[in-house]
Structure formats: C-alpha cells, structure tokens
Length: 108
View 1 (cartoon, one colour):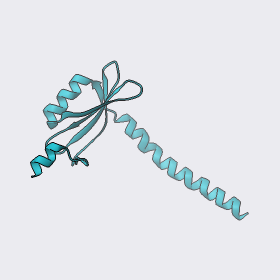
View 2 (cartoon, rainbow, N blue to C red):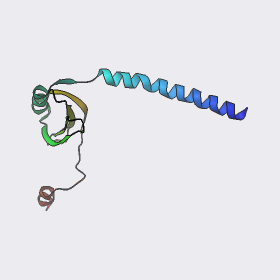
View 3 (cartoon, rainbow, N blue to C red):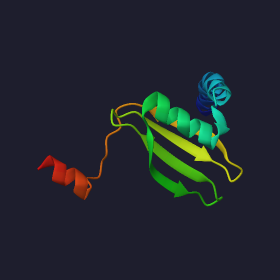
View 4 (cartoon, rainbow, N blue to C red):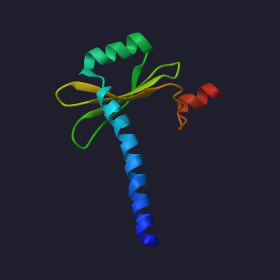
C-alpha cells in the first residue's frame, strides 16, 4: 500500500510539474522571431550594434551564428538553407570565457 501511495504521489507531482511547464513551452513557441536573414542582421546592427562574431554549421546544414555588441548584448541566430532566420536566444552581459591573443595584448 505504501508503495502504491508513493507511485500515486509521484504521478500527481509529475502532472503538476509538467502541467505548469506546458504553458511556458507554448508561450515560448509563440514568441518566435523569424524572417529573412538579411533583414534580421540589419536590425541587429542598427538597433543593438551587434555584429556577427562566431558561426557554425549544424549537421543538418543550417547556420548558427552569434552576434555580439561592444556593450555586451548578444543574439544567437539560426538560419536554414532557404534563408529563413530565427532568433534562438538573446541577452546582455556576454563575457568571453576564453582569452584570445588580442584580449591578452589589450590587458597588458
């Protein structure tokens, strides 16, 4: 009986947690910002002074880019082969974890 009550309690807790998370996931999906890559890149530069800093190709052949501004704002952009770009994430206070030779020279 105790084992059954533990299982029921776990099921109820899972339902509460998953039920509470579902609206957040749905809300996040509805806030997707997508459009032609050139327009988004122009907007990042004009509005936030962000420039492409890093790029990478996914296994599926799409492009992932990181845009950074001198003030520390950042945006991750995902672009498909047909040119449709969607913002993956954005924020402030970007900090490089790896020092480049240029960073080390300017710190001296």
